[in-house]
Image (cartoon, rainbow, N blue to C red; front, side, top):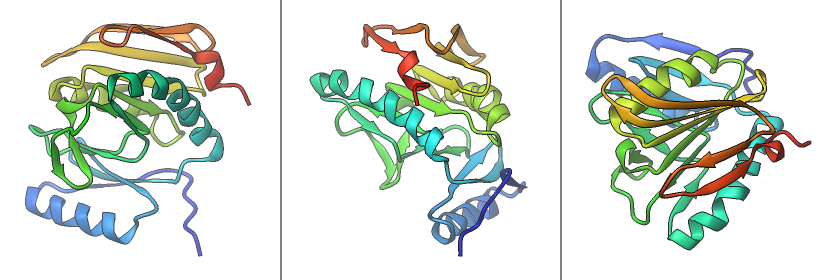
Length: 195
């Protein structure tokens, strides 16, 4: 029998050891759910819908040919360790160079990524737009992309620093998305919302 969730479930724990223990327990126990540590909260998110997965697929389809030329990898199911923070994110998509440094078999160090992308779901709006970008900037993720089909827009954040991302491009879905160097690649965001 499956678990249907209309919203995410979050637990706030102040003891770092207890947070880590509970996180690992939940990852083992609920392997078909997205388990994250976001700002010290353990968050159990619902499984993505087919529409959500299709947006990630369409983005991945555009990133893979270019990434293959560079020898990069596109992973739809990998976890990020944000090093200085205890946070552990499970983005919808990450792009990494060959043989990125791993914290463990499931976690890539956030500063080893080339791009992190999130497709917003009803339970992740605040985290995807506010909490995760701030944490990813501090951890050194060079490009953070948010695709929000509910608001019909995308946001590309770049030039990370301790205060967050210095640059942001926000446009309606359907407009071209220019990824900066080393990408120099244009994403057709209209394909992300085609059904």
